[in-house]
Amino acid sequence: MKSEMFFKTFYSRQDNFLIGIQNLIFRFSSLPKLLLEVFIRKNFGERYFRLSAAITAFFIFSFFPLFFARLFTFTGAHFGQRRHVMDSFWSTNGAYYLFLLAFLYMSFKRWQEVRRNPSVFDFAKFSLYNGDMDERFYNIKLAGSPVNKRQIEIFCEPALFLIIGLVLWFFGQSLGVLLVICSIFYHGNHAYMYRKGDEYIMDIIDRMLANRSLEDVMVYNKPSSSGFDFRAQRPNSEEMRQDLYEGIKEEFEQAATVR
Image (cartoon, rainbow, N blue to C red):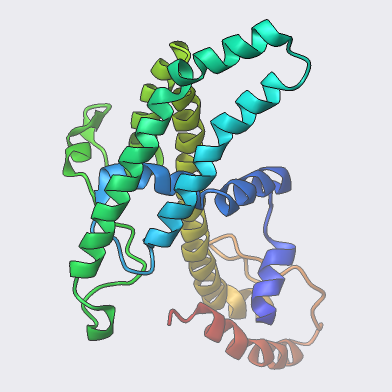
């Protein structure tokens, strides 16, 4: 829409570096987020959770400890160091692989739940539903007030794995590193989605306010109580300004309509 381009070009202020980081995290967050979700959520929508994605995540994350152990063993380490690396591999990564096996088991369990859920084609369930949240999170209080869903998704859920991950990392377990990284992606994914949702709502509100104020600002040169202004050269004649207003009114109204 031309009106959307107008607002984005002339009114928005963006931190392109931060947006770039958030977009990057969001783009690569699917599998790290999945690695945690199966433990704390259930009854996913059938298009949101796929067993094939879980199996893919299992094999991808299974490869990382082997890769780094191999890299260290064959990049300049002498024989004694190599032997020590291989001897200590399971003491460092045993919990990591047990976690992946638990992830695979929980994924199969979630897949069975999806199969038992009402069919999307019967209009019974949203196919992209991201699962039932653990109700115990609502028992958490911040500053004396119960947390809401937004706070749980952005902070509480990833914080659970972040704390566990930091403890395991302190004791030299590679699983700790994995959980810390996945919790960061989990946080970034939900923060991004809520930010985009907020921006969508604010775009609609701004367009509605602009539509309400447009005639006063454009035709009668009156300041808007909402702060909206139309930064452009306008005809000197009020009659011509009225014609100009009528010319752009329809598009503004269409942009402000919530479908």
